[in-house]
Amino acid sequence: MPVYEYRCSSCQKKSSFFVKSFNDALTPVCASCGGREMSRVFSSFAYHKSLATVHEESGDPYQPGEDYYKDPRNIGRWTEKKFQDLGMEMPSQVQDMIQAARDGQMPESVKDLQPGVTEV
Image 1 (cartoon, rainbow, N blue to C red):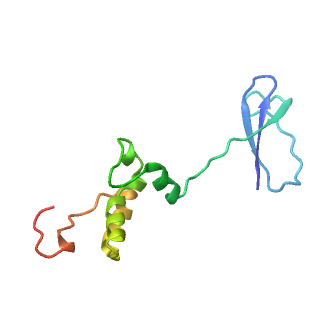
Image 2: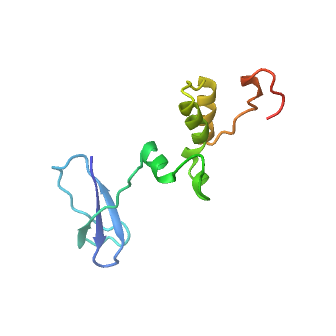
Image 3: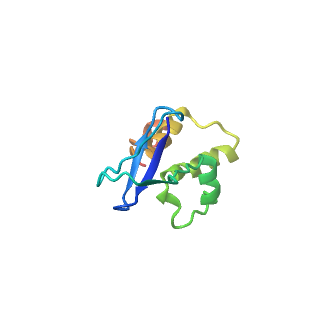
């Protein structure tokens, strides 16, 4: 179901039109001034980066740059990398906390993950 964008020749405003099928006839009318002289324009589009691409562009988690943590997907990368370097599987509790932090939820105290730790 495509969305087409048109620019009005009278007022120069852009209007978007949703159609159910590519084959449906469309007679665009300006939503702003009601003009019928419309010309089709290219719609903008979004590009979403994969997590791997974000990590690649962000650089080394051991020496992050100043903008490194502006992207929340980098939260926990050092921990993930350290477990990987040591050849250890990361506990699911740690994975859950990292994902929650990436989603904007600050984790509870981590002292319950390792016996004997009293402060974090």
